[in-house]
Image (tube, rainbow, N blue to C red):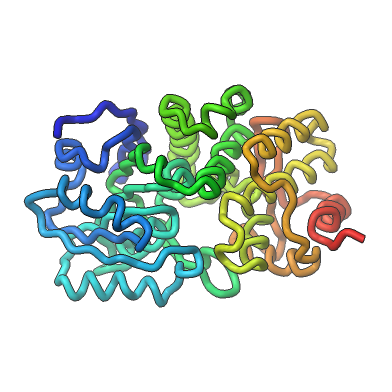
Length: 366
């Protein structure tokens, strides 16, 4: 199969730089894979939902290599050290050495676990991301964050480990369930809110084509999201500063996911409700005009995303948020909006405004 037409975004990290390739039919493109996948010994990590759809075509396109695969159970609740050990078992059973590579074929959970396994195995081997969900294509597959969950908190055990490349085959999105597809759109909306008002306006004008999975709209949204993430990660690979803005809504969202039980609220759904809380607090602090807050909430609603969290109680939510990785010196830092398209990581916000946002959204309605 000859090269399929595709878009390319580069992550600029000196010797760890790599391309993100975006377009349809890429995981069947043997010429493209030969160019970007250099290891001769490969372990494909996937799950029981994705394997029947895409494992065989990928194996076929990676011909003339030694390929093994491990098929994991599907779901956020399996993103654990216990499941991670199955990947190590397969690597050891297949006698994979430091010149081997791991390929993550699946959504964010697979990417996070396969990447973490690659970071740890023999102190670090290569891995390649082949994300098959919208959320993974625009967010979790890009930037080198890998982790598993602890029962008490999300993504607590992990490492930074950049992939060799990301191959985002947009054709895989046609088999994605509607709810998961919409959850991915939440992360796309995030990029407009934190970084690019023009992209936010484009999203407002293209709700129907995006919900209808029109190829041109999807490819543009994926590419622009990756470009924004590439710019941010290129400046701050290990989240010492600017990169934290990518977590808009996530601190509130992680509390929702943990309290609800992993998988009951999808990550993107929790982020959507969390972003509503972030814009609410930004408005209470006098930064975000009320019309911009209304635009943000309206766009999430138009994408059929939740704009209210489950009523888990403000006190319980605050306790869970205290476990967040953005807590420094006991202060919970939050990503808030100074204006539409400009985000900041803030630790010195008004406690009263924060408490009011928490009560409004997390406490039981009388």
